[in-house]
Length: 160
Image 1 (spheres, rainbow, N blue to C red):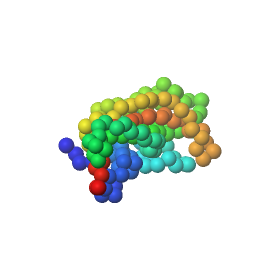
Image 2: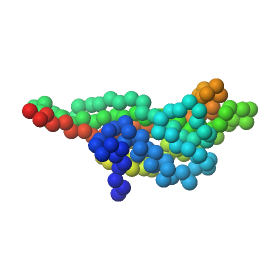
Image 3: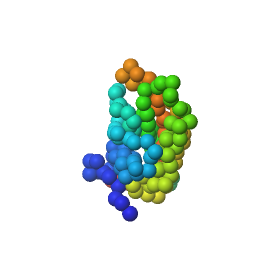
Image 4: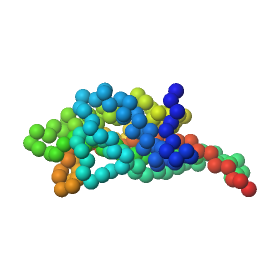
């Protein structure tokens, strides 16, 4: 079992999640039919194509249990968007082909459900894989959005 990547040495859900998502993609790049030139850990204006960009989207939580409110257990639902940027849109753009590449990327996380042990107990799920062109640097880029939700357990204990 691999140890999850921790950016700051202490738990930071946003940065650590992005780093571990990147690690899964890096470790499995050879399984894609398309070559990925670059993996970005934030959304950028002018991506080199083909590339992947990992963006933290949002978070929510559910209170799982509480012991006199001094010790609380939460499940955090961390939402990340993984963007696959293929190329500038042209008459040769094939939407089904691009969506299939997005599904290959999504499949990595179904096969590596703990995201490099970042979410070892509850894993992750894919909410959506869809073709979605994006305007980047004045160019319309053929893109696929993969929405991933990582479920992370957190225990908070009051120091009082």
